[in-house]
Image 1 (tube, rainbow, N blue to C red):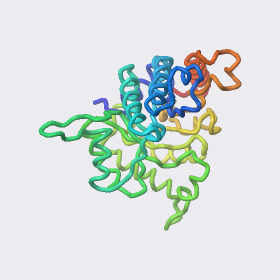
Image 2 (tube, rainbow, N blue to C red):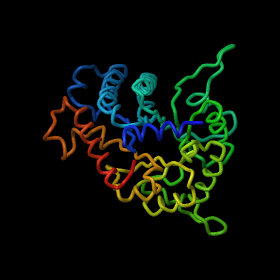
Image 3 (cartoon, rainbow, N blue to C red):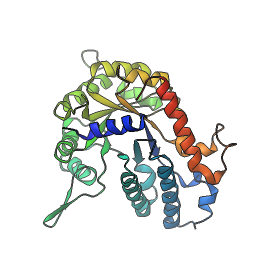
Image 4 (cartoon, rainbow, N blue to C red):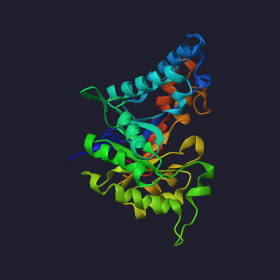
Length: 309
């Protein structure tokens, strides 16, 4: 029976593209041609961001299998921003993309369950249960232990959803905690990877991978390879490509012999491709969507050269 990770892998195979576009917009970075159409209230700013997001989705939905929407970039604009978060997720889903909500939640008991209800499960309203954001995957912070992850796993089983658990993140200071050695000499990220593999045992799909998956940064290729070896059923969400310096040949270390095993995130390098040295002379600002598409195709071809699907 196909599950959430199988659906993601099928979209990757369908598009021959193991990438996810991160839509993490900042108003100040939007094209002037959009900003000039709206005022400066929170409602106006949110409308501008939504227009930007929809154009990015329209320009890539047929060549990129998934979108990752980072909630922080919407929360910063308050209630109006959260409306844009919801609309962006819905719009991407309507276009057939797999939607990953980058929320990095991690708490205990009823709090974790409430987070999971909002994004993966359902919320009880009177006699009915309703889906709220209804995305396909969320990112989860496991550093409060199993009981902060279990509600998400339970909802993955119940509602056929998936999670990406933070294991080895791409940021420069991740090693301050994640690389620390614990009793017995093992590093923390290795222990977390082992837990993720264990947590996902009941959610392995036809692909041989589990819907309980991991975030492993492209900026640490040796760790990518190491974690792939100890977590053979764990799919990777791989941030750090492009603007953060991750290279295709490094990313390949996290994939299996069939070219599967991960989906590579790019946010700034795709969203703001029209500003980059590669594309700014080839596309006018108003054609920012075309620049994003061109960069997405370039990224796909670069990854495909490494045998990644």
